[in-house]
Image 1 (cartoon, helix red, strand yellow):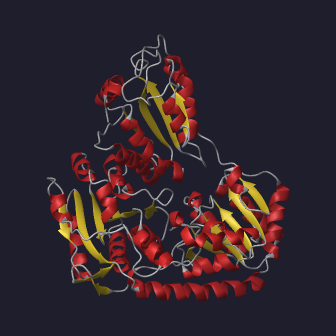
Image 2: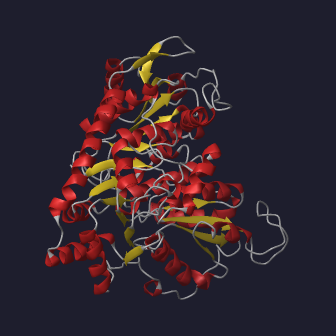
Image 3: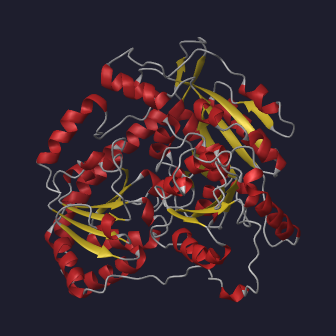
Length: 573
């Protein structure tokens, strides 16, 4: 988005775009633009830059960059900035008599650099690629361009003097004693739980080899669904505060924890209480701090795939893993997985309840999500989940066979991320059909995708699961404070989402109806549209257990804090 704070940059972009060196997409909201750039890198692996003016626009983009920072996705953010000559306040700068106020803000979430002189460009680019293309701890890089520096020329600049993109070969811990120590733990303990974090998304074959070599079971984080096929016998599904029956059973009862690419986010490890019976930890991570998060840890720092390869090779050389001794653990976990499978089938089967407001019989959200997820699989579409109850139910329901079939922005749970991410489908070199699973509240946060999507030629689908509320928070309130205690999280105002969407020429919108058959028909119609489409699905919310997938872990929130925090004093790791 161009403004008075980046007119010179805009002119440079025009020239390069006309020469087809770069592609430029103008947008209508900086938050949505930041999400689209994050999705382009996260889903498609393509480098992208968010360009905004100074002031409110930069603050909006900065807010949106939280999703990239939380999920460790590398994106360039290029903002206008106040002039360096100090002629007085620049309009839309932070109105305080201190230098580099925007740098102070932006460096909180990532690496930040003010191009105070044109000759600093080389250092800016060097720091930028080190942040954006970091192999393990990528994130947003904020390049701030003072208004008066933008039009300045660098005489005699040699382009080959500028740094190229960072490329780092995979590295693995070189300490053989550390691998032997890890092997001894794997050989000693018989109830091994392997927590697969979002950082392990790209290492499916390596994770599978480690699961087999250790005779352990894997528990996924919401962001790592698909790393192991859903039907893999040692995949116990998602574990954590929301979790699952089988995933949380493994976390609660495992005596050795192996962590792969996880930051131990509160909901992923039950606010630090997820492994009460673990006696030791093996942590594999490229980040030293994350690798040493837990007590009693053998840290194997480096590329997850490279480290696992060395560890599995060492286990094979030692030949000391007693598979028979570990079999009872696998059998117990398998029984819990079967129990979870039965509950999931029951909750996501065709369930219909009377809506208390409209008095119509409509689908539950788990049923509707299952139908849409099955349709996505049938057309090989990528699923993107927005925040809230759609996200929480979604990562419990999807049955992916590989990484990359689902993206769920659980790092920041940024409302509106999924619908904004659809714009990436129009930008990518190798395009894939995207389906955004979103709630009514999340969609209203960023409805400008209806316009941007048509302008830039998105072919994708928005499915709005409409329960007229922030369902995740309503459910949390009733769980914490009792029936009928949901407060300020809902309304009774009906919104015609189909009419809203079709107000934009080029958008196809249809009602999903009140049955599984009508929803399937609507999805097929929407998919046949050569452009952006929207399906509106009214879904039931209430105290019925079938309204959601349930929660199976602990969370340090509200009235639960005292109980959870009491465990910290006795928690071994």
